[in-house]
Image 1 (spheres, one colour):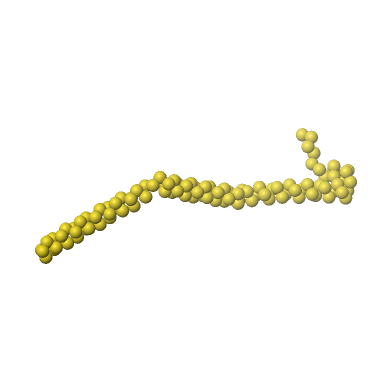
Image 2 (spheres, rainbow, N blue to C red):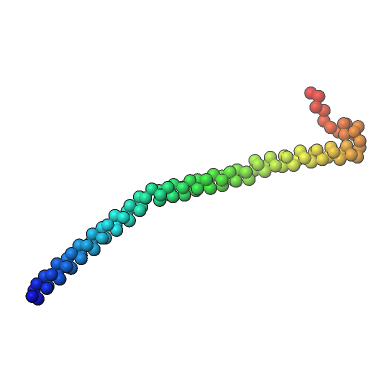
Length: 107
């Protein structure tokens, strides 16, 4: 009877080992399926798009602060200063003085 008990216990342990091995294989298969999950692919694609959008926004910001943009801003300020000077001349010297100072546009 003891021999029968040992054989039975050995068979039970072998069966449990096979079940544990099968469970591990199933778990590994499920784990690999999660990696290929379409929603995770969409998430990675969305992250990639966000990085591209951030890169484009950064480039736009750099372009806006370029030297050319700064020169354009200075030119705008220069034009406003000229307009303000003409306005001041009109206020102080009257319309005749402003007409003399203003460049001729009859070309």
